[in-house]
Length: 423
Image (cartoon, rainbow, N blue to C red; front, side):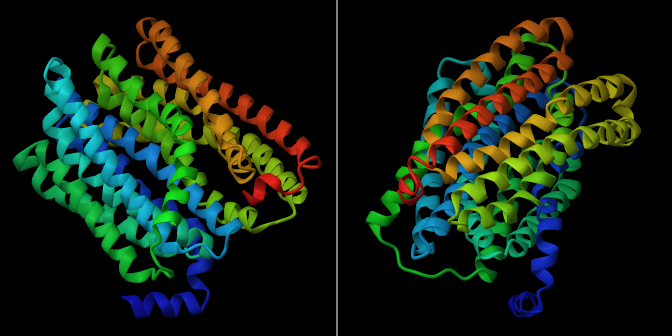
């Protein structure tokens, strides 16, 4: 397999195909939700599983977005950096986070009935975090090298392994199979990418510490920004606003379109921006892409809404009559926030490259607070649609905050020519 990948790489085939297909291996969450709904259903028995998945996905998202973005920025601004230091830092983050979150969950289980319910699913899923964080380190290195196809193939293998295990064993052994399938999928993904993508350099404790400090500066913003989906699901579960599985499906429809951009289009662009030392030119290009994403996403959102309406009966199967209209309306409400979310993701790259990522902590905290307030206001009135609308409103606020920060930072670059970029 390694020889084949190297041959395709030399011929330039992987370079041309990579951006177009890299997001396809990232759809494991969508596959899990669809299979659980089709095989088990969307009833109350699935709530503990989906709450556990929401928790682990939240923690995972906090880690992977930071590891990937900072790895590309680190190698772009400091090409002499050791790639293995990035991998060492990524693995350390995953291990510490898995242990810490597991202990916190055990403490909550001593007095929280809800924590007790999700514990059998959440604790095994914590084992995926070190594998996922280390893979993300490889992904950041691959993006910087322009070799995003190898991580994409690895992610595709993960999705395939997970789906096969669920299809074969979920009907017979029930929801406990989901955790096992996801763990084995992560092991497969890491094994494939590690066998194909060779890294260079040596491990240095100080260099790992410097990389981790840069990542940890961004933890609050990623923490607050990634919390909203988990908060949404817990509000639905606690207040009894509807099926958590249907909310998960509606959000996944929005997330699939977002993945196509953030994993298929944005990485090669970000790699070029990270290597461009002419800041004014780079920042103008980032603003241009942000507004192109903002405009183009409206058209995509309309098309996606139509596809969801057609595909809902196929996805839900026997549950279509009970949940079909709710899925379509909630998905449309989520898609109202697609354009600002994608444009905001572009502008966040500018803020990270300019080394002002600490400012994102304030905007992310404000977004999370607004999301909770809107969930509590709109959820009881509009059900799942209200929760989805709250997310879209927050996406617009996040975009406006990011636009204001990026504009302000770009206007200051003349006064601070290269200070921030070289730090």
